[in-house]
Length: 628
Image (cartoon, rainbow, N blue to C red; front, side, top):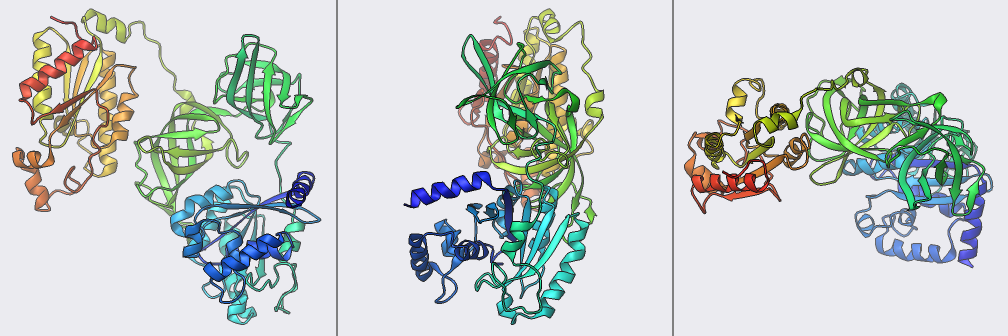
């Protein structure tokens, strides 16, 4: 019986107008309780669910002897025990007028990333405010994120009115405080509404607020006009998979994110400009006469065109911008600060590419919307940044298309999502720069030297013996007739990087610049020996990615910290202990040891000369140098 009813509800939702909305606000403002009350009073929960809710309320409830409606939504055991929402909980329901998808998002500052996830697909936001506490910092932060993520309709739900005696003055003060801030965010509509989610006042029926003459929450949600999927937007189709089951079939699978398309219509590969026409639109049910936003399809074309995962198919009349540099709003979601110059990964549509924040213009004060100067972004900070990608990408400004104008930032080392971005506009310099072809390249310059160009990267703690071993290696390579250059961390800081200090951001920039110099030297055909502490794995990976396969050899000079401190040939550890040096690697700043270096030198097991012999042997084995 339940399955039959559920199937009927699903069928009704498929045919009705759909509203996606989100509940957000500060922690414990009653978001889950509100959704639970909506479902209960709309008679959209089954008897067995209600019985389970009564039992759960006795065990986990926070409202004395009443039913705790928040438990309908707070599914995680940790959420029930703590009384807060941690993950994003989605609920689907329908009334006689409309279908709904609601996202209950966390209010705690620690889980702002989850709130942003829920807001990214919503048409409307219910921003709850506890009538006793008023507008809080998290209320403003969530409002700003909703605005940045394209939500244009807001319900300001002043909750827990029962705890302030349904006082109109309290409601009016909160509304007067919020409206000026909300208007600045560019919302198309802001509807203030006094409610008590616990007792149902103004949720579905009128409540104990005779002074309020507006609609109930559900009435408003059923009637509000919002922009749904913009089917009349330009056609955009990110290719998720190239379907090649046999030699006679090549199809491009994915989901239409905007616009409509039909057989015979012209399309363009945004990045290459190659054109063709739609031959067929295929689904599991067979060929289709059209496809529109939200449809998962496989496209076949009339021509053989070079298309891969990550490419974007568009219409010729409305091609997106293609560039490797753009400006964007970035919401930072990691406990580790964003560091300009560090190489991350970006996923834009179905394409993943390297990305670097080349500069932070400012961060936004969530209370005043003031632009604040900064060199980095911390957890939950929102900033405007310039970014550069490893390859040109196709995109629309986020305000024009939420699907093709958004991206996430991924930490290369942990593979965690650390940020979300909304593209504002492309930077013209990204399209004005072109590679100048050269008649003589790396291979020709290396051949005349009878060697293969490479970067040999020595990394380890201060005092580990990096420079000593690198010097011996270069001396032996020179004696063998090879052309080399040794870049030492201290020496580079006397010139090229003399403007950099030892903060995390400066260390990242130090390695970025040094890596670019080493790359240029490999273009000259040299074997470049680099001796840098280079404490962060992400920066070593970034340098590795600057050169070709097999042209980067990581040498981990592995010396225990105690031994490095015992040697202390430069007196640096003594200064660090005395507090005269801050952010000293291995002492009060981290060192991320290589996990799989090409060469692992355990310096306590043999003298430096033997370590150098190991490096020479490995370079010979890799055919970077020839045996003599």
